[in-house]
Length: 340
Ligand SMILES: C[S@@+](CC[C@H](N)C(=O)[O-])C[C@H]1O[C@@H](n2cnc3c(N)ncnc32)[C@H](O)[C@@H]1O
Image (cartoon, rainbow, N blue to C red; front, side):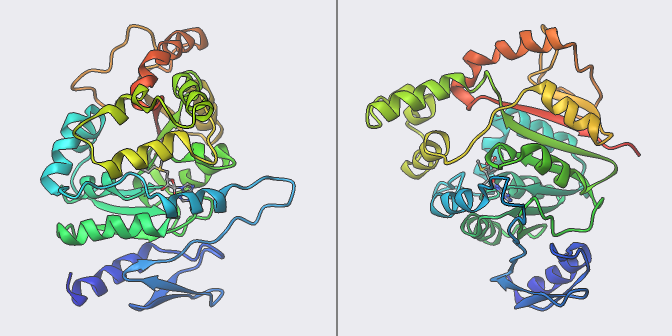
């Protein structure tokens, strides 16, 4: 990427970027960013602003941020295959219903932030169709991989920024869509993390979170115990580790993420409903749908409101996640909307 394009990018960034310490604007150069309020200087590493600040919680609250950061610096997730390109990223996304629907239904020009983008595969993919995507994570090695891919494939509308999602480094209420997929359950306080990233949603915008499910995760929990007791034998019990088409690096990253992670928590759709309610957002949709017999269709309208169902209805749906979780890691997704 040319130096010119890189500096244009900094100008774009500095409009939206804020000091994670005091919230003031940042003055950008190619090497650093300086806060206009508190004068703090943040380095820029090969085009990636390093705006990560640690949490400042009182000693009574356990923090796992540094532990989890160290884990991902060692094993960035998800791994790219050597042959990955725009075409293969698109092909993979077409195979996964959710990414395909997002691509079909999130308009060109939408401003998106991904909080906990990992190596940025979803962010890179969503930027292909001319959306402005800010791919953020605390793990610099993951961001570097994502940025290398974006440069190699000349994706000019995705920007990589290092931040701690508990201390966002962006102007509040400036994104049409905030995505955090597979992230909040690796933090010490997922509800607080949710509240913090929700501050980035503009009025009328959406938040989308993917979380490990309490029941969907049961089979993975069982396998983890079995692997631990057997010295990691029986790996073939995980369908993703049996896939012949996946590279060794991909399988290694999946195994570490699923079975060796230092911290994960599990959640329910009902819990996320209360998170949404507390911050005044409305429930839009969940995957799986929160009412029994409601199916997630091939052409599901992701951003059209649906009924959250009763506690009993959700329980029936969620118990059904036990067998499904075996394959996909026991995830569920919830979309909420901020009032206009
Ligand atoms: C399982 S990976 C998910 C990556 C990506 N969203 C995906 O679905 O493939 C979790 C990511 O969350 C990031 N993460 C965890 N806690 C974070 C925090 N406090 N601030 C920023 N990123 C965080 C980790 O660095 C890691 O890259």
